[in-house]
Image (cartoon, rainbow, N blue to C red):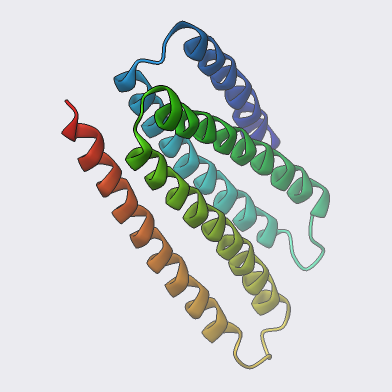
Length: 173
């Protein structure tokens, strides 16, 4: 589990360094848009790793390997923070340097939905562990399904924002 996460952490540092160099060299519109899409794909991959890590953590129950899970959460948090910082940098450049407040507004909405998605993901992980630890408890599976439904609605909202962003960013081509 740790080898994957160290790779994730190293990848974030490398990508951040590349982005900082990119900013210094260019405020190229297409380049910023490509970087934004790349960061969104990094988010997707980070969620995948987070889900895989949580599944591995649950398999260690009932005497959970909390130390490894805590390390995973730390590395995932670092990755999400790095991604968000870069996305906010792009938002600022789009708004101020490139005079694209429309795209900046999409990113603002996206960041809010991404924050909500992370909160829902954490709630789902807690609900799954609770259901595993207390199989006799009523309502656990219903709670899990409710949270999953909320995550689906959230992903649909993110997808809609990304479509709007894509449409508006291509409008200037």
